[in-house]
Length: 470
Image (cartoon, rainbow, N blue to C red):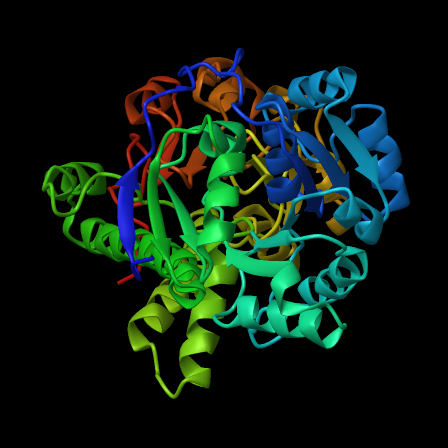
Protein backbone atom coordinates (compact mmCIF):
# COMPACT_ATOMS: atom_id res chain seq x y z
CA UNK A 1 0.00 0.00 0.00
CA UNK A 2 1.35 3.47 -0.83
CA UNK A 3 2.41 5.59 2.12
CA UNK A 4 -0.24 8.17 1.32
CA UNK A 5 -3.23 7.84 -0.95
CA UNK A 6 -6.26 10.01 -1.53
CA UNK A 7 -9.24 8.40 -3.15
CA UNK A 8 -12.95 8.89 -3.60
CA UNK A 9 -15.38 6.49 -2.00
CA UNK A 10 -17.70 4.79 -4.49
CA UNK A 11 -20.81 6.81 -5.25
CA UNK A 12 -23.13 4.01 -4.06
CA UNK A 13 -24.59 3.47 -1.57
CA UNK A 14 -25.01 7.18 -0.96
CA UNK A 15 -26.20 8.82 2.25
CA UNK A 16 -28.90 11.42 1.62
CA UNK A 17 -28.27 14.94 2.91
CA UNK A 18 -30.96 14.38 5.54
CA UNK A 19 -30.00 11.35 7.59
CA UNK A 20 -33.51 10.27 8.56
CA UNK A 21 -33.22 7.25 6.27
CA UNK A 22 -29.79 5.79 5.56
CA UNK A 23 -28.53 3.58 2.78
CA UNK A 24 -28.38 -0.15 3.51
CA UNK A 25 -24.93 -1.34 4.50
CA UNK A 26 -23.62 -4.01 2.13
CA UNK A 27 -22.07 -6.27 4.78
CA UNK A 28 -23.23 -6.43 8.38
CA UNK A 29 -20.25 -6.50 10.71
CA UNK A 30 -19.77 -7.01 14.44
CA UNK A 31 -18.27 -3.92 16.06
CA UNK A 32 -17.43 -2.78 19.59
CA UNK A 33 -16.97 0.84 20.65
CA UNK A 34 -15.12 1.47 23.91
CA UNK A 35 -16.24 4.75 25.50
CA UNK A 36 -19.62 6.48 25.25
CA UNK A 37 -18.70 10.15 25.19
CA UNK A 38 -19.35 12.40 22.19
CA UNK A 39 -17.12 10.42 19.84
CA UNK A 40 -17.87 6.90 21.06
CA UNK A 41 -21.63 7.15 21.42
CA UNK A 42 -22.16 8.97 18.14
CA UNK A 43 -19.87 6.51 16.34
CA UNK A 44 -21.68 3.52 17.82
CA UNK A 45 -25.16 4.81 17.08
CA UNK A 46 -24.29 5.75 13.49
CA UNK A 47 -22.64 2.37 12.81
CA UNK A 48 -25.76 0.64 14.15
CA UNK A 49 -27.93 2.83 11.94
CA UNK A 50 -25.80 1.80 8.97
CA UNK A 51 -26.79 -1.80 9.71
CA UNK A 52 -23.92 -3.18 11.77
CA UNK A 53 -24.23 -5.08 15.05
CA UNK A 54 -22.63 -2.75 17.61
CA UNK A 55 -21.80 -3.03 21.31
CA UNK A 56 -21.08 0.24 23.15
CA UNK A 57 -18.97 -0.23 26.28
CA UNK A 58 -18.42 2.01 29.30
CA UNK A 59 -17.39 1.54 32.94
CA UNK A 60 -19.82 4.11 34.36
CA UNK A 61 -22.79 2.17 35.78
CA UNK A 62 -25.12 5.19 35.91
CA UNK A 63 -24.32 6.11 32.32
CA UNK A 64 -24.91 2.53 31.17
CA UNK A 65 -28.31 2.42 32.85
CA UNK A 66 -29.35 5.65 31.11
CA UNK A 67 -28.11 4.37 27.77
CA UNK A 68 -30.15 1.18 28.15
CA UNK A 69 -33.22 3.38 28.67
CA UNK A 70 -32.35 5.32 25.52
CA UNK A 71 -31.16 8.42 27.40
CA UNK A 72 -27.87 9.79 26.07
CA UNK A 73 -25.63 11.34 28.76
CA UNK A 74 -24.89 14.29 26.47
CA UNK A 75 -27.06 16.77 24.58
CA UNK A 76 -26.60 16.39 20.83
CA UNK A 77 -29.35 17.15 18.30
CA UNK A 78 -30.82 13.94 16.85
CA UNK A 79 -28.80 11.61 19.09
CA UNK A 80 -31.59 10.50 21.45
CA UNK A 81 -33.86 9.60 18.56
CA UNK A 82 -31.15 7.58 16.82
CA UNK A 83 -30.09 5.88 20.08
CA UNK A 84 -33.62 4.71 20.82
CA UNK A 85 -34.08 3.49 17.24
CA UNK A 86 -30.78 1.57 17.35
CA UNK A 87 -31.72 -0.09 20.66
CA UNK A 88 -35.20 -0.97 19.40
CA UNK A 89 -33.76 -2.52 16.22
CA UNK A 90 -31.54 -4.84 18.25
CA UNK A 91 -28.45 -3.62 16.40
CA UNK A 92 -27.08 -1.74 19.41
CA UNK A 93 -26.14 -3.35 22.71
CA UNK A 94 -24.77 -1.78 25.89
CA UNK A 95 -22.10 -3.50 27.99
CA UNK A 96 -19.66 -2.91 30.83
CA UNK A 97 -17.22 -5.58 29.66
CA UNK A 98 -14.51 -4.62 27.17
CA UNK A 99 -13.18 -8.16 26.87
CA UNK A 100 -16.63 -9.68 26.24
CA UNK A 101 -17.43 -7.03 23.61
CA UNK A 102 -14.07 -7.67 21.96
CA UNK A 103 -14.67 -11.42 21.77
CA UNK A 104 -17.93 -10.74 19.94
CA UNK A 105 -16.42 -8.25 17.46
CA UNK A 106 -14.31 -8.02 14.32
CA UNK A 107 -13.46 -4.36 14.84
CA UNK A 108 -12.99 -2.57 18.17
CA UNK A 109 -12.96 1.24 18.31
CA UNK A 110 -11.17 2.94 21.20
CA UNK A 111 -13.01 6.20 21.84
CA UNK A 112 -12.06 7.04 25.42
CA UNK A 113 -11.09 10.42 26.81
CA UNK A 114 -7.55 11.80 26.63
CA UNK A 115 -7.80 14.88 28.87
CA UNK A 116 -4.85 17.26 29.20
CA UNK A 117 -2.65 17.03 32.25
CA UNK A 118 -1.57 20.11 34.23
CA UNK A 119 1.13 20.92 31.65
CA UNK A 120 -1.06 20.18 28.63
CA UNK A 121 0.30 16.69 27.99
CA UNK A 122 -2.56 14.37 26.94
CA UNK A 123 -3.37 11.68 29.50
CA UNK A 124 -3.57 8.36 27.63
CA UNK A 125 -4.24 6.31 30.74
CA UNK A 126 -7.73 5.35 29.56
CA UNK A 127 -6.31 4.29 26.17
CA UNK A 128 -3.76 2.09 27.94
CA UNK A 129 -6.45 0.50 30.09
CA UNK A 130 -8.69 -0.11 27.09
CA UNK A 131 -5.84 -1.72 25.14
CA UNK A 132 -5.10 -4.17 27.96
CA UNK A 133 -8.77 -5.11 28.34
CA UNK A 134 -9.12 -5.54 24.58
CA UNK A 135 -6.12 -7.87 24.60
CA UNK A 136 -7.90 -10.11 27.10
CA UNK A 137 -10.77 -10.58 24.67
CA UNK A 138 -8.94 -11.17 21.36
CA UNK A 139 -9.56 -14.73 20.13
CA UNK A 140 -9.71 -14.25 16.36
CA UNK A 141 -8.25 -11.65 14.02
CA UNK A 142 -9.36 -8.23 15.31
CA UNK A 143 -8.82 -4.70 14.03
CA UNK A 144 -8.25 -2.28 16.91
CA UNK A 145 -9.09 1.25 15.80
CA UNK A 146 -7.85 4.21 17.81
CA UNK A 147 -10.44 6.97 17.35
CA UNK A 148 -9.42 9.05 20.36
CA UNK A 149 -7.27 12.13 19.79
CA UNK A 150 -3.86 10.96 20.95
CA UNK A 151 -0.16 11.88 20.85
CA UNK A 152 1.97 10.63 17.98
CA UNK A 153 3.03 7.06 18.61
CA UNK A 154 -0.09 5.98 20.51
CA UNK A 155 -0.98 3.36 17.89
CA UNK A 156 2.47 1.87 18.50
CA UNK A 157 1.80 1.97 22.25
CA UNK A 158 -1.52 0.13 21.85
CA UNK A 159 0.13 -2.48 19.66
CA UNK A 160 2.93 -3.02 22.18
CA UNK A 161 0.50 -3.34 25.10
CA UNK A 162 -1.54 -5.96 23.26
CA UNK A 163 1.60 -7.89 22.27
CA UNK A 164 2.90 -7.69 25.84
CA UNK A 165 -0.41 -9.20 27.00
CA UNK A 166 0.44 -12.35 25.05
CA UNK A 167 -1.65 -11.88 21.92
CA UNK A 168 0.02 -13.26 18.78
CA UNK A 169 0.98 -10.65 16.20
CA UNK A 170 -1.08 -12.28 13.45
CA UNK A 171 -4.27 -12.01 15.53
CA UNK A 172 -4.66 -8.22 15.39
CA UNK A 173 -3.74 -4.92 13.76
CA UNK A 174 -3.91 -1.41 15.18
CA UNK A 175 -5.25 1.43 13.02
CA UNK A 176 -5.47 5.17 13.64
CA UNK A 177 -8.79 6.65 12.49
CA UNK A 178 -9.09 10.14 14.03
CA UNK A 179 -12.49 11.81 14.30
CA UNK A 180 -13.28 15.30 13.03
CA UNK A 181 -16.78 15.79 14.41
CA UNK A 182 -18.08 19.06 15.80
CA UNK A 183 -20.35 19.12 18.82
CA UNK A 184 -23.85 20.23 17.86
CA UNK A 185 -23.57 18.63 14.41
CA UNK A 186 -21.78 15.43 15.44
CA UNK A 187 -24.17 13.06 13.66
CA UNK A 188 -23.98 15.03 10.44
CA UNK A 189 -20.19 15.13 10.65
CA UNK A 190 -20.03 11.37 11.21
CA UNK A 191 -22.31 10.63 8.26
CA UNK A 192 -20.99 13.33 5.94
CA UNK A 193 -17.35 13.94 6.90
CA UNK A 194 -14.97 16.07 4.85
CA UNK A 195 -12.58 13.12 4.81
CA UNK A 196 -11.87 9.76 6.35
CA UNK A 197 -8.28 9.34 7.58
CA UNK A 198 -6.91 5.83 8.05
CA UNK A 199 -3.43 5.33 9.43
CA UNK A 200 -2.47 1.69 8.96
CA UNK A 201 0.40 -0.61 8.12
CA UNK A 202 -1.96 -3.44 7.16
CA UNK A 203 -3.94 -3.61 3.94
CA UNK A 204 -6.17 -6.25 5.52
CA UNK A 205 -7.04 -3.94 8.43
CA UNK A 206 -7.59 -0.97 6.13
CA UNK A 207 -10.00 -2.91 3.94
CA UNK A 208 -11.99 -4.19 6.93
CA UNK A 209 -12.35 -0.67 8.31
CA UNK A 210 -13.43 0.64 4.91
CA UNK A 211 -16.04 -2.10 4.77
CA UNK A 212 -17.37 -1.01 8.15
CA UNK A 213 -17.62 2.58 6.91
CA UNK A 214 -19.35 1.60 3.66
CA UNK A 215 -22.34 3.85 3.16
CA UNK A 216 -20.41 6.98 4.19
CA UNK A 217 -19.30 8.91 1.13
CA UNK A 218 -16.12 10.93 1.64
CA UNK A 219 -12.57 11.36 0.42
CA UNK A 220 -10.32 8.74 2.00
CA UNK A 221 -6.75 9.45 3.07
CA UNK A 222 -4.74 6.29 3.77
CA UNK A 223 -1.37 6.79 5.38
CA UNK A 224 0.82 5.51 8.22
CA UNK A 225 -0.37 5.71 11.87
CA UNK A 226 2.01 8.52 12.87
CA UNK A 227 0.82 10.76 10.03
CA UNK A 228 -2.82 10.02 10.83
CA UNK A 229 -2.29 10.95 14.48
CA UNK A 230 -0.58 14.18 13.49
CA UNK A 231 -3.27 15.09 10.94
CA UNK A 232 -5.84 15.52 13.72
CA UNK A 233 -3.56 17.72 15.83
CA UNK A 234 -2.37 19.71 12.82
CA UNK A 235 -5.92 20.41 11.63
CA UNK A 236 -7.14 21.68 15.00
CA UNK A 237 -3.95 23.66 15.59
CA UNK A 238 -4.40 25.43 12.27
CA UNK A 239 -8.06 26.22 12.98
CA UNK A 240 -7.12 27.59 16.39
CA UNK A 241 -4.54 29.88 14.81
CA UNK A 242 -7.20 31.21 12.40
CA UNK A 243 -9.44 32.08 15.35
CA UNK A 244 -6.63 33.82 17.24
CA UNK A 245 -5.49 35.61 14.08
CA UNK A 246 -8.91 37.16 13.43
CA UNK A 247 -9.21 38.08 17.11
CA UNK A 248 -5.91 39.95 16.86
CA UNK A 249 -7.24 41.69 13.75
CA UNK A 250 -10.38 42.54 15.75
CA UNK A 251 -8.22 44.40 18.27
CA UNK A 252 -6.76 46.48 15.46
CA UNK A 253 -10.29 47.20 14.23
CA UNK A 254 -11.27 48.50 17.66
CA UNK A 255 -8.20 50.72 17.73
CA UNK A 256 -8.70 52.23 14.25
CA UNK A 257 -12.52 52.30 14.06
CA UNK A 258 -12.75 49.54 11.44
CA UNK A 259 -15.22 46.62 11.41
CA UNK A 260 -13.80 43.13 11.74
CA UNK A 261 -16.82 41.57 10.00
CA UNK A 262 -15.98 43.50 6.84
CA UNK A 263 -12.30 42.67 7.16
CA UNK A 264 -13.04 38.96 7.66
CA UNK A 265 -15.29 38.90 4.61
CA UNK A 266 -12.68 40.69 2.54
CA UNK A 267 -9.91 38.23 3.37
CA UNK A 268 -12.16 35.17 3.59
CA UNK A 269 -13.20 35.49 -0.06
CA UNK A 270 -9.60 34.73 -0.98
CA UNK A 271 -9.77 31.08 -2.02
CA UNK A 272 -6.43 30.47 -0.31
CA UNK A 273 -7.88 31.53 3.04
CA UNK A 274 -11.64 30.80 3.15
CA UNK A 275 -14.31 32.13 5.49
CA UNK A 276 -14.40 29.32 8.05
CA UNK A 277 -13.10 30.14 11.55
CA UNK A 278 -12.87 33.87 10.79
CA UNK A 279 -15.65 34.91 13.15
CA UNK A 280 -14.14 37.24 15.75
CA UNK A 281 -15.31 36.52 19.28
CA UNK A 282 -14.25 35.23 22.66
CA UNK A 283 -11.95 32.49 21.37
CA UNK A 284 -11.95 28.70 21.46
CA UNK A 285 -13.73 26.33 23.78
CA UNK A 286 -14.95 22.77 24.04
CA UNK A 287 -13.14 19.47 24.09
CA UNK A 288 -11.01 19.76 20.95
CA UNK A 289 -9.16 22.98 20.16
CA UNK A 290 -7.85 23.84 23.65
CA UNK A 291 -6.79 20.25 24.35
CA UNK A 292 -5.36 19.55 20.92
CA UNK A 293 -3.42 22.81 20.71
CA UNK A 294 -1.87 22.09 24.12
CA UNK A 295 -1.18 18.52 23.03
CA UNK A 296 0.54 19.61 19.82
CA UNK A 297 2.66 22.15 21.70
CA UNK A 298 3.76 19.47 24.17
CA UNK A 299 4.40 16.95 21.38
CA UNK A 300 6.64 19.49 19.66
CA UNK A 301 8.50 20.18 22.91
CA UNK A 302 9.10 16.48 23.45
CA UNK A 303 10.66 16.33 20.00
CA UNK A 304 12.88 19.33 20.66
CA UNK A 305 10.78 21.89 18.78
CA UNK A 306 9.46 25.17 20.19
CA UNK A 307 6.14 25.82 18.42
CA UNK A 308 6.17 29.59 18.99
CA UNK A 309 3.41 30.29 16.46
CA UNK A 310 0.94 28.02 18.23
CA UNK A 311 1.98 29.34 21.66
CA UNK A 312 1.16 32.85 20.45
CA UNK A 313 -2.29 31.62 19.42
CA UNK A 314 -2.76 30.19 22.93
CA UNK A 315 -1.76 33.52 24.50
CA UNK A 316 -4.19 35.43 22.30
CA UNK A 317 -6.98 33.09 23.34
CA UNK A 318 -6.30 33.65 27.05
CA UNK A 319 -6.03 37.41 26.62
CA UNK A 320 -9.25 37.65 24.60
CA UNK A 321 -11.53 36.89 27.54
CA UNK A 322 -9.47 38.98 29.93
CA UNK A 323 -9.83 42.00 27.62
CA UNK A 324 -13.58 41.42 27.36
CA UNK A 325 -14.07 41.43 31.13
CA UNK A 326 -11.82 44.49 31.45
CA UNK A 327 -14.00 46.34 28.95
CA UNK A 328 -17.16 45.49 30.91
CA UNK A 329 -15.50 46.55 34.16
CA UNK A 330 -14.30 49.83 32.68
CA UNK A 331 -17.65 50.71 31.09
CA UNK A 332 -19.58 50.03 34.31
CA UNK A 333 -17.06 51.85 36.49
CA UNK A 334 -16.15 48.64 38.32
CA UNK A 335 -18.08 45.42 38.81
CA UNK A 336 -18.50 45.42 42.57
CA UNK A 337 -22.22 45.23 43.31
CA UNK A 338 -23.12 45.28 39.61
CA UNK A 339 -25.48 42.67 38.17
CA UNK A 340 -24.48 40.96 34.93
CA UNK A 341 -27.00 38.95 32.91
CA UNK A 342 -24.95 36.22 31.27
CA UNK A 343 -26.76 34.68 28.31
CA UNK A 344 -25.23 31.39 27.22
CA UNK A 345 -23.09 28.99 29.25
CA UNK A 346 -22.24 26.12 26.87
CA UNK A 347 -19.06 26.66 24.88
CA UNK A 348 -21.14 26.77 21.66
CA UNK A 349 -24.80 26.42 20.64
CA UNK A 350 -26.54 23.04 20.28
CA UNK A 351 -24.54 21.40 23.08
CA UNK A 352 -24.48 21.29 26.87
CA UNK A 353 -20.69 20.96 26.93
CA UNK A 354 -18.97 23.30 29.40
CA UNK A 355 -15.42 22.12 28.80
CA UNK A 356 -13.21 25.20 28.36
CA UNK A 357 -16.37 27.33 28.07
CA UNK A 358 -15.59 31.05 28.06
CA UNK A 359 -18.69 31.64 30.18
CA UNK A 360 -17.03 29.95 33.14
CA UNK A 361 -13.95 32.15 32.83
CA UNK A 362 -16.04 35.31 32.51
CA UNK A 363 -18.24 34.40 35.49
CA UNK A 364 -15.22 33.49 37.60
CA UNK A 365 -13.47 36.78 36.87
CA UNK A 366 -16.64 38.80 37.44
CA UNK A 367 -17.35 37.11 40.78
CA UNK A 368 -13.82 37.89 41.97
CA UNK A 369 -14.52 41.55 41.20
CA UNK A 370 -17.71 41.50 43.27
CA UNK A 371 -20.32 41.16 40.52
CA UNK A 372 -23.71 39.51 40.91
CA UNK A 373 -24.45 36.98 38.15
CA UNK A 374 -27.83 36.05 36.70
CA UNK A 375 -27.32 33.37 34.04
CA UNK A 376 -29.43 31.52 31.51
CA UNK A 377 -28.71 28.76 28.98
CA UNK A 378 -31.24 26.47 27.23
CA UNK A 379 -29.47 23.22 28.19
CA UNK A 380 -26.21 23.81 30.08
CA UNK A 381 -27.43 25.15 33.43
CA UNK A 382 -27.42 21.78 35.26
CA UNK A 383 -23.71 21.40 34.54
CA UNK A 384 -22.96 25.02 35.40
CA UNK A 385 -24.64 24.66 38.80
CA UNK A 386 -21.95 22.15 39.74
CA UNK A 387 -19.27 24.77 39.05
CA UNK A 388 -21.01 27.93 40.31
CA UNK A 389 -23.81 26.97 42.74
CA UNK A 390 -23.77 30.50 44.19
CA UNK A 391 -25.05 32.38 41.15
CA UNK A 392 -28.69 32.88 40.08
CA UNK A 393 -29.99 30.64 37.27
CA UNK A 394 -32.86 32.31 35.47
CA UNK A 395 -36.00 30.73 34.00
CA UNK A 396 -35.53 32.44 30.63
CA UNK A 397 -33.52 35.28 29.04
CA UNK A 398 -35.95 37.97 30.24
CA UNK A 399 -35.74 36.71 33.80
CA UNK A 400 -31.93 36.79 33.47
CA UNK A 401 -31.80 40.46 32.42
CA UNK A 402 -34.16 41.62 35.20
CA UNK A 403 -32.50 44.55 37.06
CA UNK A 404 -29.20 43.82 35.30
CA UNK A 405 -26.64 46.57 34.81
CA UNK A 406 -25.39 44.87 31.65
CA UNK A 407 -26.41 42.07 29.32
CA UNK A 408 -23.45 39.87 28.41
CA UNK A 409 -24.01 37.47 25.51
CA UNK A 410 -21.52 34.60 25.60
CA UNK A 411 -23.08 31.78 23.53
CA UNK A 412 -24.86 32.56 20.27
CA UNK A 413 -27.97 30.40 20.71
CA UNK A 414 -30.66 31.18 18.10
CA UNK A 415 -33.14 32.23 20.76
CA UNK A 416 -30.78 34.99 21.84
CA UNK A 417 -30.46 36.24 18.27
CA UNK A 418 -34.28 36.55 18.23
CA UNK A 419 -34.46 38.28 21.62
CA UNK A 420 -37.12 40.99 22.02
CA UNK A 421 -34.62 43.70 22.82
CA UNK A 422 -37.30 46.23 23.75
CA UNK A 423 -38.65 43.83 26.36
CA UNK A 424 -35.13 43.12 27.59
CA UNK A 425 -34.33 46.85 27.83
CA UNK A 426 -37.50 47.47 29.87
CA UNK A 427 -36.44 44.82 32.39
CA UNK A 428 -32.85 46.03 32.77
CA UNK A 429 -31.55 48.59 35.22
CA UNK A 430 -28.59 49.53 33.04
CA UNK A 431 -28.42 50.27 29.31
CA UNK A 432 -25.37 48.28 28.24
CA UNK A 433 -25.07 45.18 26.02
CA UNK A 434 -21.76 43.34 25.58
CA UNK A 435 -22.01 40.85 22.72
CA UNK A 436 -19.06 38.46 22.84
CA UNK A 437 -20.09 36.62 19.67
CA UNK A 438 -21.27 39.44 17.37
CA UNK A 439 -24.62 37.63 17.31
CA UNK A 440 -26.98 40.58 17.79
CA UNK A 441 -27.91 43.33 15.35
CA UNK A 442 -26.13 46.50 16.44
CA UNK A 443 -28.91 48.62 14.97
CA UNK A 444 -31.62 46.62 16.73
CA UNK A 445 -29.80 47.01 20.05
CA UNK A 446 -29.47 50.75 19.53
CA UNK A 447 -33.13 51.03 18.46
CA UNK A 448 -34.07 49.49 21.81
CA UNK A 449 -32.27 52.35 23.55
CA UNK A 450 -29.27 50.27 24.57
CA UNK A 451 -25.55 50.68 24.02
CA UNK A 452 -23.94 48.00 21.92
CA UNK A 453 -20.41 46.84 22.61
CA UNK A 454 -18.90 43.91 20.72
CA UNK A 455 -15.57 42.57 19.52
CA UNK A 456 -13.90 44.11 16.51
CA UNK A 457 -15.96 47.28 15.97
CA UNK A 458 -16.74 50.54 17.77
CA UNK A 459 -19.48 50.81 20.41
CA UNK A 460 -22.88 52.07 19.24
CA UNK A 461 -25.55 53.99 21.12
CA UNK A 462 -26.04 57.62 22.02
CA UNK A 463 -24.29 57.17 25.37
CA UNK A 464 -21.69 54.68 24.20
CA UNK A 465 -18.11 55.35 25.17
CA UNK A 466 -15.01 54.10 23.46
CA UNK A 467 -13.80 51.19 25.56
CA UNK A 468 -10.97 49.63 23.58
CA UNK A 469 -7.66 49.51 25.46
CA UNK A 470 -5.24 52.27 24.59
